Image (cartoon, rainbow, N blue to C red):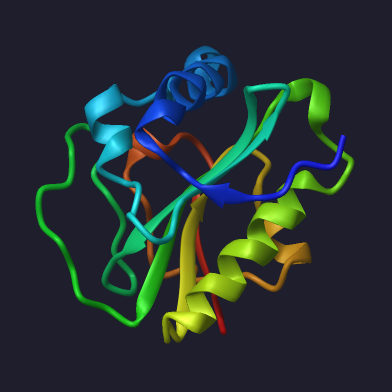
Length: 160
């Protein structure tokens, strides 16, 4: 299996929502479907599919530096920013540790550069900071995400 990232379509949402729920429901981080959909930039969100099943996705949107979505409700404001906020990157359990997360990140990074973004930011949740640090993201200790992002959440960014 060697899925290639492709743009997220409306038909992909049932698979994305199922994967998001499977990944986050146990931690209390699963988002309302409308809120999650509002974090998907039209030209900056991608999926990996294998046998018609979504096995990974990345959702990103233009967002001001040092800010992040409020998880309790959908985003209704479109921001013009040189910062691309990577809201979520998930790979299905049976497909992890084979480079698919890195493949999604590299694809998003290439698109961000092509679209003239200067930075990528994110909020690392759980033990995700290790993955993000290994991919060039650095924490900003003075920026504290709200409790809704879970214990130990860290705002991180990297230049493009």
